[in-house]
View 1 (cartoon, rainbow, N blue to C red):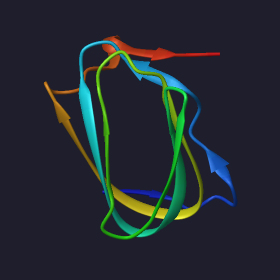
View 2: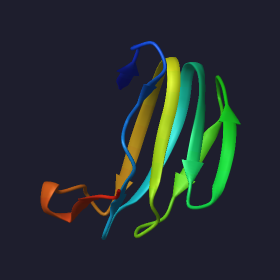
View 3: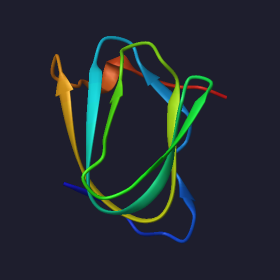
View 4: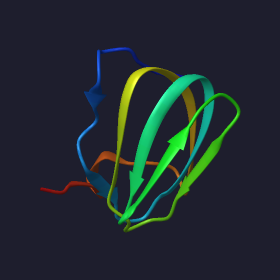
Length: 81
């Protein structure tokens, strides 16, 4: 499980070249930006990000679980400006 508890933290726009990511929101609220769409999410919401799609999270305080398939590897991560 991950916690994002910095005031209005932003994870940085990035994409995963090979991995699909599924985020399950356990606690808190956030704005997910996936491609050109924005989603306001809260407890029990699910966000799915397909491989190759740029995305980032803006949050105040958030606890979430991320499931990746295939398994995430550092070399397939790409920061996007």
